[in-house]
Image 1 (cartoon, rainbow, N blue to C red):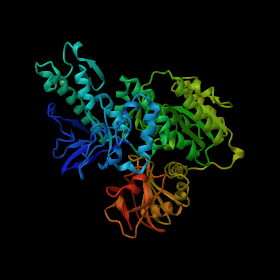
Image 2 (tube, rainbow, N blue to C red; image 1 turned 120 degrees about the horizontal axis):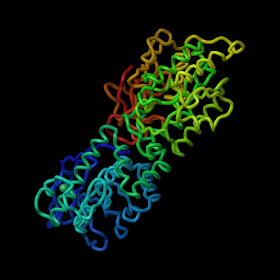
Image 3 (cartoon, helix red, strand yellow; image 1 turned 30 degrees about the vertical axis):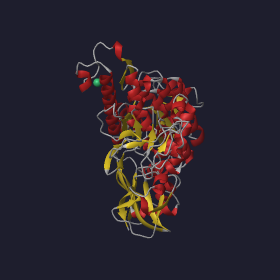
Image 4 (cartoon, helix red, strand yellow; image 1 turned 135 degrees about the horizontal axis):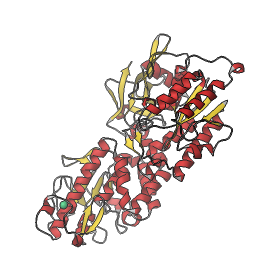
Length: 561
Ligand SMILES: [Zn+2]
């Protein structure tokens, strides 16, 4: 839900997320973002704090930009004209995770989604990444001042008692000077927060914020529990805003298992996935550090054993892995299957075991193979204990010559005689599997009657002499042509409905009437007016944003009619 934007106040522009720096006549701190001032100080580009109702006389002048009452329970928000939204009662929900998550869900599920969200009194440097992750755009520096007053030296991984510091762990201007007083702490705390905020913006730009958040929450139990609760109870909200294709990431913490894009993978497998038609033998194999897996040495050996058995056309390779659970071979290019990295110790914890067991059992029971082969290493125990009626060919050492020979023999001995002819090529069925995973049931329609041209994985889908889409190794998913967009629109999904005009260049949100709910940022969509497909392109907003926003690029158009 984190986002980059610009807030414009009195013709001054500030990139968001940003700090709003508290400033009074006594307290002048350098700042790059908007300055937060009290009612009686006016400064261009500043945000003014409204008075609390304790002092509320007749100060509600018309036209003033007020940033509300900082969520004070004594305040009166009726006079708020700022256009901001606030986290209410932030000081009381700060340590109450379920109420915190409730508030985020409430604000981000409402029509206020696009308004800048302001969070007051909570922005210590180590919390900025998490707050931005929850979609907070403006964070005031009141806590930095309070901390300075309390002798607290702030860092991006927690709070240090300033009097205990022998050597300043920072080289900002204030720390390099000899002053060790309130002014030093004020300026250092401000600088620490400003640096962290820049890092947060960088991380958002590069799709790396989740990793930053997972590392920052470590220093504060409140943050850990908040993140975990966000992942459990606000999954749907987060998933709606999570791009379908993101940046490569390191899944290095327990929280990584529940990243919204990881959870989406696991759910989508169970909701949309079916094995390629014609496959009869399931071979479960371990993942490899190298991605895509098929380029790794170990997978080349598995492949060779399968090919020399003569049964390759009916073998379905499925990779067992944490944190994704299972990756069917044909989906190995689809985000995040080739974009994650995990620490490998050979020991699986309970959550990981449970997760792979659930997915493997689902696969085996729902897809009904004639033969199941477990050719696993460290995953052998949790997987084997969750399925019955299978052959173990690895003995826990899948790469050894003996194991590979065993795999080859078991496959070779599998009798196919009475089960119909073996197809020579499965490319279309594998593509169908990708299409279904990407587009749901509409993916089937795309593949009906289609032929494949080119060399896997860079293949084109052609129907009646016309190209309808293509798969590329780099994107790992299907890119549609206008003809492909028509199939999607006929199937009634992934449509963005527009007014009666011909989109050129890009489609801006103001032209969008309605967007189908399954669209995610990065998805291929059909731009339609009524039944007519006017263009195809890549979604740049979530469907709610497309419908709410009055500006901004909604779809990046690839082909227009
Ligand atoms: Zn410093």
